[in-house]
Image (cartoon, rainbow, N blue to C red; front, top):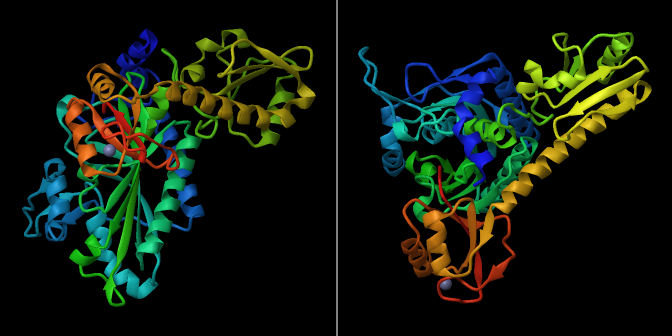
Length: 455
Ligand SMILES: [Zn+2]
């Protein structure tokens, strides 16, 4: 881990406060106050998720915050898996006890019974809510690990067959690939080992990224719930029970996005997320003309008169807050430009500005993505020897890639050989065709598995 990355991680929460994103001084651990700039960024991310889900034919709904205990308890294994994170409400008003939602499989399934009759299958819904999980205090870090998880965009589907469910899972994996790419968050996709699957799911596909300190962080997940909830809640389709999927992405993805793009002292936002894409600074003869051109492009921009010269842009509050592009007209009908992905000032003729601006923003988007993926892929190491896997789990950072065959025994031997601080993230879903010699038994039919150090 570089000194720069270590510093970035150490200063992360201070950076969020200085850049008006969240304030950690609320007197309840794990609960932060979203500040004005943070709210704007959050709204952009939720809007991005909303547009991707709507494009895939999901309808937006909103279920209540409280789940009656009687509903929660219908699925005992699911309940047992989440109990230690759950906030319970003991009603003093003769109502039945309830829990604050940690996730919404149980209330959705309870409603599916009505909706299948009224609306027919398939059902595809998403919602933007907060969920609450009582995480250990020692692990709390703003947005990355909170007790109030906000925003939480989650989806739930009800389907008629296993085949349809597999197709839906593939769609949902693509949905999160699309969201994370637009947020410039690099990731590996893997199918979690059975022992680490979401409670009551048949399998879980998860997206993990690497934080600057070298830890991995799960940024999105997709669960094949099979018929388990349908059976528990007696939700029937024909002669069998309904199949379901659930997915979720949280405010953690916003924390990761900010951390991965930021410099030591300033945020850098991808143009697809930035609430304003361009800052127009200074004032001179051609200023109004440049402003008219910006209006024509319909890109969100703002004016900053506190800085007179583009050379001093680093002193602008908007630079600190991560706006991708700064422009200023000069006296010779040129536009001076500072982009957050290159150093120095470039110049173009004002007559060309409106035409070039969208391409410039697209280039920033692509280059930011390339930059983070380059760092990310550099932090993935290939390991072929079980001794090296042990070493990695003791001292390593980033992600280790190993080949492992299908045998339960080989997974269990690998597990015994890695330190408790490390986790076997699962079998790679993004490189299914690559096979090699299993790290344990040397059988040639091994698939790629990832190992990481969770934050
Ligand atoms: Zn093996």
